[in-house]
Length: 173
Image (cartoon, rainbow, N blue to C red; front, side, top):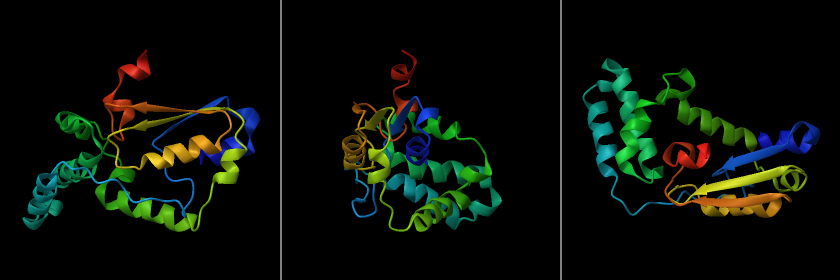
């Protein structure tokens, strides 16, 4: 959306920051990166809770366990996971029942997307940031960087997908 807007309305956009962006095209879309860390305990905890009827009887706890399971692979420092999960707002769009279907619907509606031409028309300064512990492939960030003329690539080495939450000092200094 950001790329489409910036290429269509260049006078309205001064700069862009893309954080671990999706692939620039369906053709080059790579599978998520699998971490070597064993994260099965998060999945097991969630599955046990569901098996005991917790999804229906305690939706707030179900949501917390769901997000722990979803975010754990993309976090650099798992000691911070609980604090991140506690900060997820209780809004319908981010509820477990909606988040997966929303993402699936978005990709389905995109069809055979290719934003390479759109990216090449972006005229503003663009910073593409990648967290080295993310499950999103680094290639996504690199292909956006090579496609946007005035772009710069930056890696956060102590972050996963939640760049803004894991290395907050880089955003405030």
